[in-house]
Structure formats: structure tokens, C-alpha cells
Image 1 (cartoon, rainbow, N blue to C red):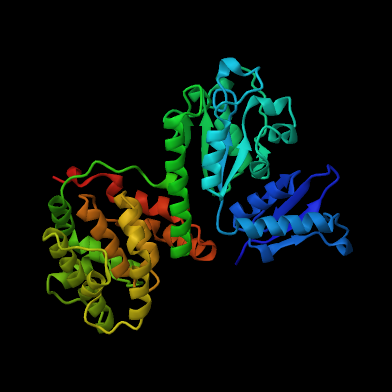
Image 2 (image 1 turned 60 degrees about the vertical axis):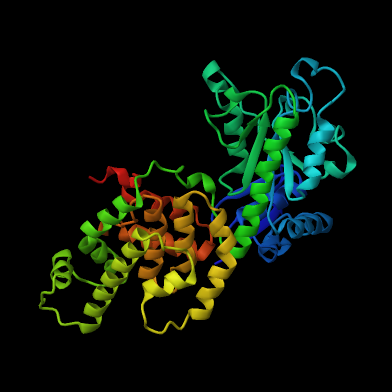
Length: 434
């Protein structure tokens, strides 16, 4: 079900957008509200203005048109650039002067990335209006400066630490959007904040290069999200873990094959106990006489061994040919769809350098066609990098199913990515296997 928004003009003269998930977005600017609606995942057709018949105050027709028009322009995605001014666009010691020696360089970067929008974080927002700040920028850039972060009162020295980051988080209000901050004071952000480009008292060549690289990455991500049909916040993915060798990962999977097959079978709804699966894999018989289920268990076992052989021999590749080997000889009625997935996602898989991110993206592309094969492809990527395979313990299955339902409804993958990442061998590298 898509997210709905009802936009009203309240007594505080601010635009309020009440989302169907309970959140309320508030803004005094139509462009800013449009950006936040798009970032929240609201489609243009799902943004409704207030109804006077229900006693609501609705925005003027011109404002409503402006919101819809801006949403249409932003539909392909937006990046937010949280901008400090003193120490970035001009040296901090020259903050009382009218000159901005680094402004033109900054604006040229913006002109190269049309999806980027600017939000002011500078303390100047406390004494100047947004319109007055916009006047410093070129005419073609002014419309892309969409707002300011809220001002939080600082009561102590401790409040100062990471205060600007908290203001950014308050501005985003839980919205999933790609963002980057330009600032000259690292103490206003958490340590090692990956979103911060720290300026050395100015926006010079090094800072320009870093910003271009970040925005190029965001452009690439937008294209990837469009191609795959879902999006995610990359910060939920653990950094590259220290890994062992693919041989260690293969040894671990072989040693624990009965448990792995059992847990994969549970995902398919097979109601066997671990001991029953172990007995079947050892060639024994069990009392339950469900030949179709027995066949599924053995199919998963065979596919698991094929996966180990492919990884061990260095022949595992993320492509349709490997998928077919793991799926088996049974005709697959989804052949065309699966071929299209690998064709569309080939470049994306190549660009995802973190094996955990790549593995989970692969699973989310393939799970609808065959759960076991999707997990085997996913684990092949992990094992190839010396990481342990994903293994969901039975107690977590209800949570897994709940999160997958949420993903299918919203196409926002951050939650399920975080969950599956936590199921990768305790998120440890294969070196932990003795």
C-alpha cells in the first residue's frame, strides 16, 4: 500500500503534511515540503490537499500546484547538501566580510548535479532569513536552497558535541534520503561521520573533489534504485568485515550442512526437526512419509554441495548460469524474468564492493522466484569473500517474515538489510572458524 499524505494550512501559517504512517511533516516553504514528501516515498498522486468539506484549511491553488510541480521534478530522486557557510564558502576569519571566494566553485558543483538540494546549517540562519541568505547565491542556484535546519538550544559544553548532526537528524525526521554535510568543525558531528566533508577553512580543490565523488555516488545509487525497484540506506550495512578464506567458509558450510539445510527448509515451510533432516541426509528413513518434502530437502542438500564446489573451485559467478546450476534441472517458469534481473543488475553487482551489501541486494532481487536458490546465491557471494553464510535461527523466523512483508509493501530495504546482515555468522569473518 502506497504512502498517502494530506496537506493542510494550519493556524501557524505553516504547511502540514499528515502521512498515513502517522508522521507529520511541517514546513513554511512549498519546495521544501515537496522535497520532504518525495524523500518520504509519497507519490504525486498520493499527495492530497485539505478538503474544505471536512472543515480543513487547505493551501491556495497556487501553492498546491507548486508542491505537485516540485514533486514531479524531484521524482527521480534527491540528494540533500547540508551547508555551513563561514569556514566553507569563505574563511572563518573573514566571516564579517561580504566576499565569498569559494562560492563559485561550490555553485559549479551544484550545476553538475541537478538532483542536489541545499539546506543551511550555518549559525547565520539564527539571525538572517532564508531569503536573505539565498541572495548571496546566483539566481539559478537560489531555488535549490530549500530550507534551514532547526536550531537546538545548547545549555552546556556537552550539548555542543555533535549538535549540528542532531539538528540534521531533526530536520530529516526519519526520512530516508542521501545526504552529505559541508562543515569546518568536526566537533559538531559524531566521530568518523561518513556523511561529513570536513573543509580546511574553505571549499578548495580537495573539498570539491570529495563532494563531486559523493554526489556521483548518490547519482549512481538513484539509478540503481530505479533499476532494482527498491532502495536502502547504505549506512545500515556493516563495513567490510575482516574475513578469512573462501576455503574456510566452504569448510564451515560443509561441516554444518545438516543444520544449514534444515534452516533453509524452514524458510520453505518444511516442518521437519533438525534430527529428521540429519537422518534423511545420512540416508536413513523417518516416520513422516511426505515424498515431496523429502525431495525438497535433498534438492537443497545437492544445491548446497554444488555451491561449495563452485566457490571452492573459484567458478562462482553472480549470473544466470550459476543460478540455474543451483536451482537444478527442473524447468523454471520464471526463466525470462530471472534473466532480465541479472541483465539489469549486472553493472550494479559489479559496483557494489562491500560483499555484505552485494549479497543482500542479490537476495532481495531473487527471493520471489525461489527462496533456497536466492539464499544460496547470496551465500556464494559471502563465502567467496571468506565470510560465513547467512543462517536464520528458528526463533528469528517470525521477525524475518514480518520484515519481508514490510519490504514488499514499501520497497524500502534498510530494515531487512540490517536484519540479514546480523544473521551472517554473528557478523564475523570466516577466520573465526577453527
